[in-house]
Length: 362
Image (cartoon, rainbow, N blue to C red):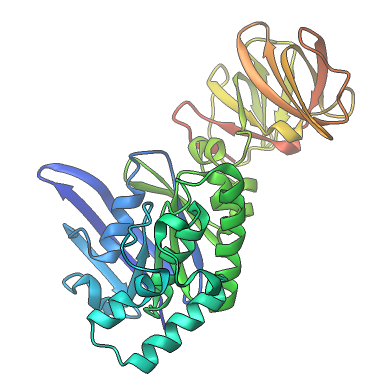
């Protein structure tokens, strides 16, 4: 079994604490993605799991065994890095079998593993080429193949697609997803790209400033974010945030008005949060949740700045009273042009409310 457990894991460099008591449980066979902005600690956390960074406090278990002081080679993991790190003078086949040969693995078993990995990754016809004769996507497949031949308990991926162009990223994303389904092995994947996180993960771990903000299935995080940071990070284009003010709070409902259009009043079902009349809050709405005028709870008039028409879908970048900018996603909006005035509707059922600290009001 290849469960992974982190309990109060802390990383310090001198007096500076980078990871602040991370707690996480990963089930056998899960595909878990660490996502967050640059500097949030996701790669550091991955390297601690791999044993490439010492942990300052806490406990890491792999398959029920504490591995705090276990060498990386003995943890039952294989890691794929951002750089391909292939030996340029060796063929693909030699790159794949190099680690096994150095460890004295029997030749017959080594050949079996290499052949199996090549078939899984569809690189059999490339076995006698050298890295300089391969495309970026092919090199990344070889790097993944080197991890597969180790037959690890857990695969660790550290932003493996960031060096590829957009088309190859999509292709490799699909291939990694297929690989997980075929092998059924636990995988931990680090990325700053939330699209990769949403499309690959069984479970997403959102990090910020060394803290785990929320853990959950992709659509759970999308539909039910714990705070404003998660709401804004998960989803593309990201959620719109509008400045608002509380004008009423009774019977389990909170009424707010937009600070830039005070005639836009929306009443939301907020049952447990304590908010005061006059309190400044933030209203969140995703670009695709704007409705046609008259079809929601209240209409909102905006000034169109830029309209991007991408075939069936359009992204409309607009301003509210010349101040706040929002993005509206609409279908069949080819007649919307720059500098138009547009009226859309808001629905209380599709909006979120956050306090000044970014906490979700429920």
